[in-house]
Every structure is written in structure tokens, then in C-alpha cells.
Length: 249
Image 1 (cartoon, rainbow, N blue to C red):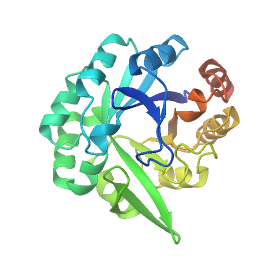
Image 2: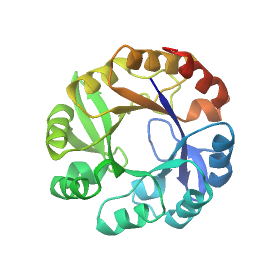
Image 3: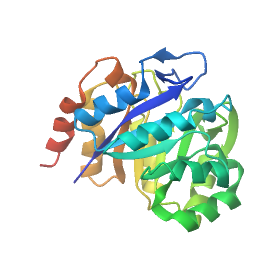
Image 4: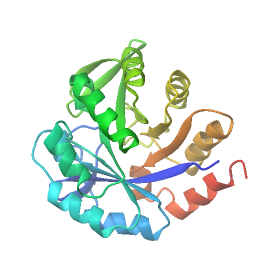
């Protein structure tokens, strides 16, 4: 079993930042995005999850900067944020990234999403950002500011359209260092044949080991994005990589 860790580099106003529960205005800055990404590469990352937060919030674009980061890395990059039409998708793919992660557009423009999935296959992942409200699983769109519909209905539609991979976030956990919503991740993984990447809430190496163990036990969870815990020094990437590689060994 190979459980993949994807250190996150979220970019706003040209800087690497982390948000709390995805809310604009909660940023903590961590310096130059390229420096952050190169640090994770040196520490053994095989993937980087690179996000244009300004594009996601509709407040601008860091496209040129992100293209520069992708071009200087030797590892695989999952590019996300503000990819909503043919032009922005083509620009993202032209960076040489390994895949892109669609968010709002996959919820608001199902026909376009189905078209690009058909054209690009596993170069397209879809982010499912979940808000659990009164026991109902709702999706969040537009930088987590609007309702994007029912999780399970949307997941069934996207499976029919052939989506190859999902990045699943419990919005209430993201950036909080409170641990991931393992139950939600298992439920989504059980409901789709496509692999799931966990996102949000990772606080300790044990959180990652728990997800890796769930995967080893048969859950369709392929890996996890790791953000604030790494930046806050809760653990190092080499420590996390050793721990998840030991699961099932």
C-alpha cells in the first residue's frame, strides 16, 4: 500500500498562507510560495497541493507565480483554485502540473465538468468541500461562501460522468488542527469507486497513521493533504512519511 502525503502551499497576495475554516481574513503568512514548496520537496514530498486562494475567492490571480513554482519543482503538483472555464483550465494545465482540482465549477457547471473529465481523464480531480448542517451533508462553493448542493446526489452524478478522484474536506475541520473527520471520509470512500484524498484538520502524525490504517484496511482513501500542522511545526514531513510508510509494512 502506498499512502500519499500532499503538503499544501496555499497562495494569497503572492504569499504562502493558511486559513482557518477557509475564511478570507483568517490568513497566517508563511513567506514565499516557491520556498515553501521547495522545502517540502527537499523533505521528501512526492506531491505538492498548490492552491491559488485569490482565484478561488474571485479576488484576483496568482497564475504567473504558481506557473513559476510548478516549473521549478521536480515533484508532481496538484493545482487548485479558480479553475472554472476552458481558459483557466488550459492555463493551469499548461504549467505542466500533473493534475488540477476543480471546485466551484464542478458544482455549478455540471455539463462543463463532464466535458473536461471526458477530455482529460485522471488529470482532473474534483474537490468536495463538505458542511454538515443538522445532519445533512451540503457542499460549499465560491470559496466556501455559497451552498453547492447535496453531497451524495452530486457524488453520484460525478461518478456517472467518470470523475477519477475526489479531494474531500470537512470545512469545519480545515485549518483548525482538530483532527480529520474520518467517518465522513470513510462514508465518501465507500460511496464511490474513485479514490479519495483526505483534506482538513490534520493535527498529529497519529491522524495520518489513522487514515493510512483505514486505507490499509480497505477504505478507498489514497492519501492526505497536510497543511497547517506542518507549517505550525506539529511534526516534520519526514516524520509523517516514515510513519505512514510503516503502516501495513
